[in-house]
Image (cartoon, rainbow, N blue to C red):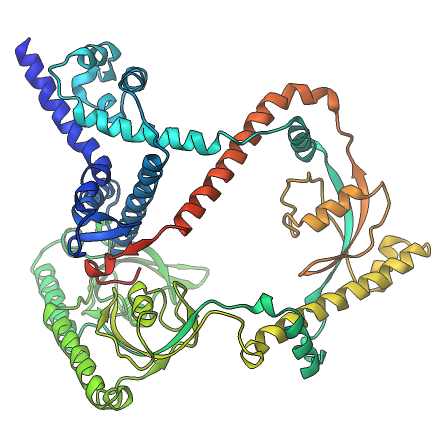
Length: 598
C-alpha cells in the first residue's frame, strides 16, 4: 500500500509542476507588486508586476510542445510563441484583478464537486490513473479522497480556472434573447431570394476627369473636420545595417561544400551525404531528390549548371540566393521535345558568423556615437549609410519603410525631435532612428488633411456618377423598357445572384446589407431604384422570394435560441474584455529581454 502511495504521490507532484506553470501569474505575481525597479519584470498590468520567471516557465513549456510537433522551430515560430505567452499572462492578470475586484470566490465544496465531476486533463493523461491505457475514474476518486496525496497545487490551478469561469458567467449573465430575435434569426436563415441585377462600378468612370476645386475641399473640411481627427503622430529618419554574411562567410561555406564533394568523389554515396549534411529540410530525408526539372524551373546559376551535366555527374559548387549547392543528375528524358532532368542536390546555407555579426554591430554602434557628435547626416555620409524617412505614423502602427517596432515607437513617443536612438536590433538588421517631428493629437490643418479630403470627395463623386447612370437606367425601366434590353443599351450586363438568405455570402457581392435588404424588400419582377455602395450602384429585379414557413419555426426555435444566445454572449464578453484591456495600464518590457521588433 505504501509503495503504491509513494508512486502516486510522485506522479501527483509532477502533475502539480505542469499545472503550476498555468498558475504562476497568480502565485508569483503577488510577490512582486511592491518592486520599484522593473528589473526581472516582463510586464506591469495596472501596477501589478508579471515576473520574467513566470513568462519563462510558460514560454518554455509552449516551446517544448512546438518542438514535439514541428520538424523545425523557426525564429518566427519562437517569436509568435513569446507574443502568445505574453498576451496570455497579461490577460490572466487582468482577469484575476477583476475577480478580486468583484469579490468572486470558490468554496472548498464547489472546488471538490467540480474536481470530482471534471478531472483535470493532466490527471486523465497520467499513467497512474489509467487502466489498459484508459482513464480509470475509480482510481481517481480513491486518490481524490486520500488526504495523504498533495493535491494543493492542483486545487490552486483548478480554483483559478473556476474563478475566471465564475467571472465570465457574471459578465454574460445579463445577456438575454427574446422571441422576436429568435424568429428574426429563423427568417434570416431560411427565407431565400434570387435577383437579376445590373452593376455599374465606380471604376467605369475616370477619376482624371473629375474636378475638385479648393473651395470644395475647404467647405467639406469645415463641415466634416471631426472625420479627419488624428492621433498623435511622429516621423523618423533612420539608417539600417543588414545582418548579411561577409565574403569570408561565403568562402568558408564554399570550402565546406568542397569537402563534401571530395568525400563523394572518393566513394561516399551522394544521397547519404545529402541526408547527413544538406540544409534543405524538404529534400534532405529523400537524399536531396528534387524530382524532374524543366529548364527555367530553378534560379539561373542552378539551371545553367544542371543542364550542363550528364547523368551520374556531380557539379562543382554552385551559388544561388539560398546558398552553395552540389547538383547531381540522376537521369534525363525528353517530353514533347523538351529536355527534363531528374536531379538531386546538397545545399549549405551561407550563415552569418559571430565574427561578422560583431563587426556589423561595432560599425552601427560607432555610427551612433559619431551621429551624436557631428550630426546624423554627416555620420551617415562618413559610414556610407543611406538615410531614409518614414513619414508620419501613429503610436503602435506600422512604421513606413521600416515595419512594426515597439522599441522605435516607445523611443519616438517618449522623446523630443532631434534625439538619436541607441542601436536597435531586429531579426535581420540593426538600425538607428532620429526623431524628425512629432505632431499632437487633434484635428489637422487643412493643408495636412487636404489629400484625405480630396480623396473622400473623389470617392463621393465617383459613387454619384455610378448612381446617376443607374437612375437613367431605372427611369427607362419605369417607362416600360425591359430590364435586360435597357442593360444592353447601356452597355451593362445582367447578372444572376443565385439563391441567397439574409445571412448568405453572395458571390461577387459579399454580404452587402444594402443589396440584401433591397432584394428582400422587392415583390416578384419589381425593380429597385439604384442602390448606392462604395463599389458602385446596383439595380435589382426580384426573380423569386420564398415564403417563411412558420410551422417549422417551433422545431428549430430552441436550438436557434441557444445558438443566438451563445453568439450574443460571446460578442458581449469579447467587447467587455476589449474595453477592460483598453482602459487598463499595460506596460510592456519585452524589449529589455528580446532584442527584436514586436
